[in-house]
Length: 316
Image (cartoon, rainbow, N blue to C red):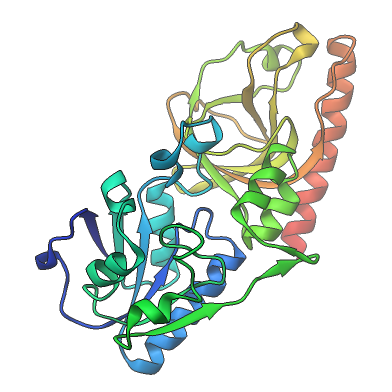
């Protein structure tokens, strides 16, 4: 997949001369709604025997418009992961635009003239609620007016799950609540994050449940407080286990959130390993136990449930 990184104003010499069907969007998470846009664009590209291209951005547009919150600094798909996902979906070319104040200040007509036409677009494809400027004027309904017959416009309708729109906002809300099963359903795949195994308090090994403590990037969304079934990728191998996101408040109050995984039947030294986490299923919320004995009793039940979960997955 060809990646063309663009800083406004566009240098036309960066752009190959061949025509493309262009899918547009920020595509954070590349959820089922985004996938519908890409699939439609891919079908149109194949019909016209041209390349499939995607126009997307290197960071949240919110950075340009308002003061950041903590949520604005997190992504369901950081740029590298998003590019890998697009590559796996068969995208030929990505126009990765640095979203700046100058870029955002363009009128809708200027954006179309300076970018969509310059990309040699034959069909522009996006979701029904996609905007490319001010929401009241830069709509998909108005895009044919700005296109002026130079390219076609295809709008992909709303994709729903349980009568509600599939959206990155809905997924982020479910993520905060720890509803990873809903997150995975809306994404259409198992959510993943990355991290590095670091030293923790080593308390788990004293109670018979040693854990890999994982330092996670600040820009990636994590599921909310709870205990989950998950897999940990070390090198090329995936290891199943149970993952805790929580404060370990059985051992004290006002503790920081940690991400710890007890791997099933694993022996070895993981310190310093870069890892990938695949989040499967929520087992339960966090509980403050009266002491270590109660915690161990619950962890044994969690282990039984985790083994049963992965046995069922293997049988499917």
